[in-house]
Figure 1: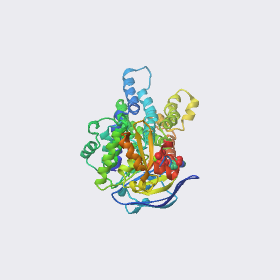
Figure 2: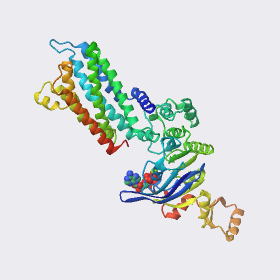
Figure 3: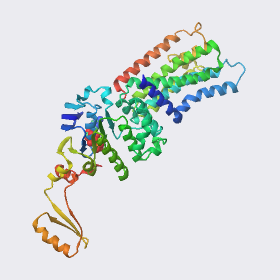
Figure 4: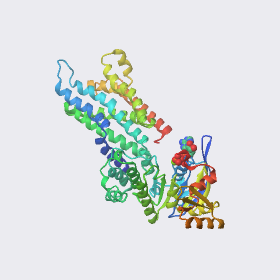
Length: 282
Length: 228
Ligand SMILES: Nc1ncnc2c1ncn2[C@@H]1O[C@H](COP(=O)(O)OP(=O)(O)OP(=O)(O)O)[C@@H](O)[C@H]1O
Ligand SMILES: [Mg+2]
């Protein structure tokens, strides 16, 4: 369980976190969504004890973060975008260092490389890995010691769809094994696909919190049906009785090419909540 | 203790692939062997090249390599991952320090081939002390510098002073006066005499003082900057 109570944090004069509150039960995937500069990385750093905070309380593994011992830290896995690899060493050697530190037999290194799809690249030096392979190696390092709690800071940012899916699959496997996973992302689809709970973070405040589907449904007040006609134009109809006849006629006339109902995505929800476009600073 | 061994092991694996550091380690021992065998001039002091290169080795290899290793790990953020995996800063520093010291001692071993018996032990003892002080100096730079670039530009002048002043002081009285305050010059003076009984005046004290200064500098920088 991860518990965050009323966290405040400021750098110099600038307040970055403004009373953050959430609880993550064991075995859940929790997603923290927010635009660049919202404070996502700052929250991860605080939760993992890399950064001090001004006010509030953080409990993790039934302890205050400050009281975590070396043994406790072995139950936590962290992947941050800035965390590096030993560029000149091979994939296997990179993992072996940590296998030694955690007291894991080297046989497991091969096994875990296989699991993240790097079995053919064990001897390749980290400097020669593609971006997607690199991300998977970083992930392998996080999972190697079978941590109970895993923090992933933008695990798929900047990756191709295939690597992204591979990483999602690994994350979901870990969930099945009972891990609690905290991840941050810019990607709404990713959050909807992976997370049990999401929190929307903007300017150091959580602006909404809940199951991804529920959040979307809650903001579904501008229900609309969008038709793409064979003539090429788009037609927006409201989700009401009056539209039925119109749709019927168009269908009869075989003029409809596609038809969608527009459930809001987390993206539009975010836009509505903050008036801020999500990708604008990316 | 286990973590220290892990760091040493990691460094050993890295050495073979890290050409800039590898060159630092083998350049002077190699030059010594070549020069001692290739050149013999009338009236040249015994083992002239060995003693000359030994001091340059002390002044260059440990400082540059320790500074490069630490600053690279900081720059690439691999150090932080080690810390998160509960490797203590002192374990890391001991690992890197011992690794560099051991490799340099192997180099010194190669350089000592011209000596025999007691002289060789004397030579290796002096080298060991010199490497230790240089490693401290390198660690100061590595901890202080933000990245490798900064470390290199900081190491350069220090290296010039420590490695080249002792050589230049052989030809210039004024330089010799300045060089006197540095441990490398004093080690050179001791090496020339090659014995305890005939040790130059104050040499031991100056070397000790150098060591103390670097220990203080190290703990000061470490307190201010930590290993992040
Ligand atoms: N060391 C620091 N000193 C001063 N300000 C900082 C520092 N680190 C972060 N900040 C500020 O804190 C705010 C939040 O940063 P943070 O890295 O947590 O954002 P983020 O949500 O992770 O963004 P991104 O999606 O780009 O990674 C930013 O406005 C940033 O400028
Ligand atoms: Mg971030």
